Length: 420
Image (cartoon, rainbow, N blue to C red; front, side, top):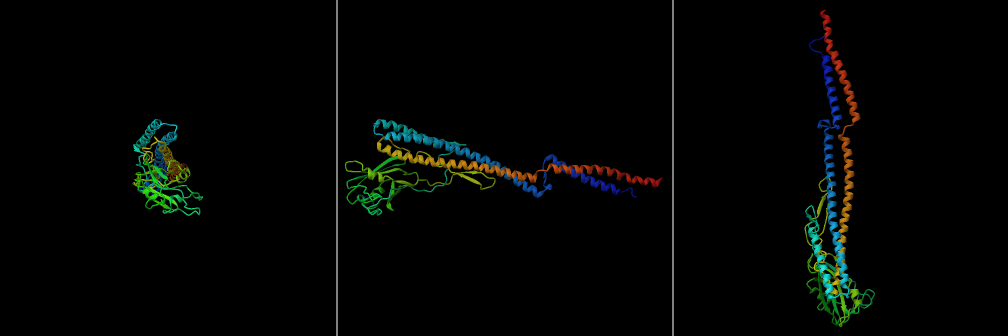
């Protein structure tokens, strides 16, 4: 029997300390709601949890980024909607001006309204902003490469056998794809017109005996190449093909027509109707750096969606300086505005597609964030039921340890019996 050292009491005290520590940890988890309150609780789990938290918060910000992107796209598309409305009114005026019941003065009044509408298109392009960023001035355009407007005409044949026309084919021998003569004769005049940068231009070619398509001396293609706005006019696979003289917006050709008149000035409608089928195969673009807007729609680097909002003004739509003050100019203007309407429709459709894509992006980000939050909760959050069981267990052990410590402290009193 020992009085100086009570081993039983020491043992009981040690276990009491352990029970109190474990009870305190269980109480901390119950009060905080977290299974991991410090790295010592679960070092690996803490690292995984913090990484997931970074992802979750990043996804939340990505949702807000995508929502801001939708707002920007909606702003741009709304402006283009008004440009659409303006172009429709311009087309209506051009159709009105084509009617020869109008006088020169009447067309002049129509021209004044057209000029104002063109100015409004430019104002919208320069003033439509989102968060102080101009949207339609080309500052958010994707990278473009310099290329000219390219036009190709209908397939031409030179004889009833259907042989394709070549540069050496004479104009009077041209036939359509069905083998019918176009009816072009010597002394006829071929007039070709277009709107170049919105300005109406015209040129005439007089057909002589032996005149060819070209490009040869005295050929039609050679004459085209002599203009300030056509280059490389050739005959390829039976088609007349040419480009704008310069790439980009400079000398952008729209509404090209080719018409045939006899020596008395009467139009040969059959030939004109067949020749006047030129289509644009390449739209002029400016060489520019890639300035498209990039929306961060993910939690990690590089998870971007590019939004390209092209330059949309009277020049890029080829309506700058458009004229309707003569019948011929108004007729060309209708074709030019039709092309402009198609360009705006394409731009609006692209923006609408981006908006729908961003809607789906937001939905996907929400689902991903929800699943990551659930996974992080399983790692980080406390299981209240389990922790309550632990707390109850150690609370009971604490009470038992205290009772046993009291008993252990009384054991040395047995020594007094030896002294009696």
